[in-house]
Image 1 (cartoon, one colour):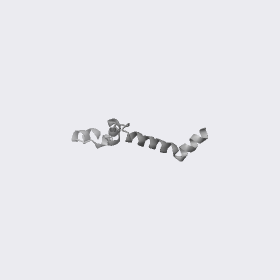
Image 2: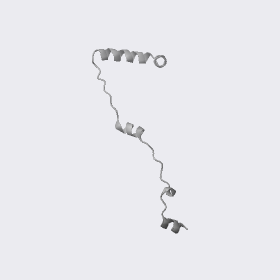
Image 3: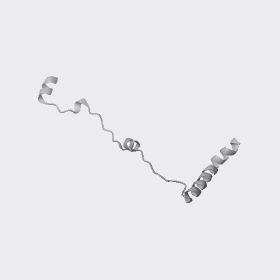
Image 4: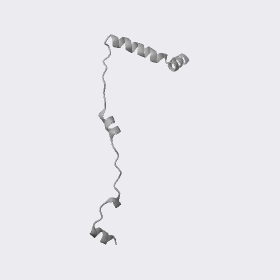
Length: 69
């Protein structure tokens, strides 16, 4: 039985059966097609990474230069 199942799976038989059943159910309005977008996924994919500020990138003032010398 398992070999038959795997053969049908590899050959696409199960996908064709599912597609036909889905088509028949949809033609009888037995399927409600909803689209759901999870905003957490969108936010994670749209986020820009910012480079970390390095200590040497800050503005040096005259008093900082004298203290470092």
